[in-house]
Length: 262
Image 1 (cartoon, one colour):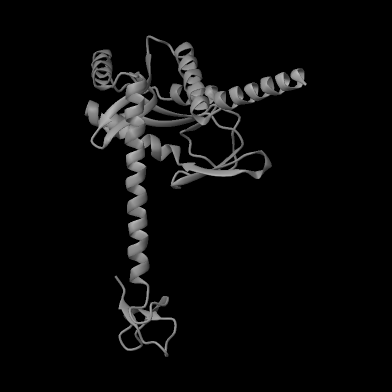
Image 2: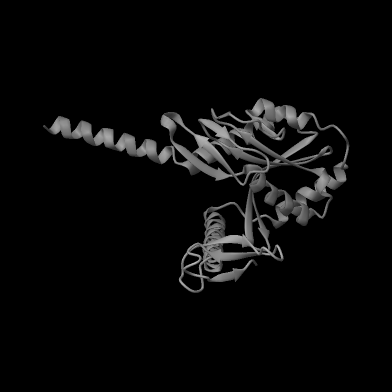
């Protein structure tokens, strides 16, 4: 009996350790370290300088960059996604979808849009033209695209290296790059537990504010499409004489409630 309980306890401890090791945050951290090490070893250090895990102050709080590469050929801002399964998405979509084994689905923010906020933060700090900044996303796990993806999304580190190496037009001087690095590192918060906690709090505040705004927007929209007389649903109709559209109660002619179209 004792041996059984001991084995059961060991198995539970192993499963708990695996769950802790494989959290999305830890997976993401491993992916970021993998990308940093790969970029540092593959790219010529005389031409490229890799900065990772930068927490930069912005007007609404802070923003965290996975990787930033300074080079004479431009500045590359890279968002890392360590994911598995099938990925569906497009450049203009707000949300992308991940489908894992067994059909489990989840949506996540379009990483190009997410990274564009990082690009704009760098542009603001360095005061440079947006055309000299490159927005790249790299998937480092086993994920595969199932829809046509934008050309600045790389699937694997080798593909990312090719994307970076393809940019060969000189944009900056070494003097400018040294000034950029000094400015970014001078503005960046120290990457420690306190700064990460502050960044997470900022994200939570933003999420809460968006949720409230979304709920308020839905409430306003719903109130504008409810009948002012009976509270029922309304549909858009057109005035036969003028052609103007208006909201009319679905219970017409029993109810003649109307609203103007905003």
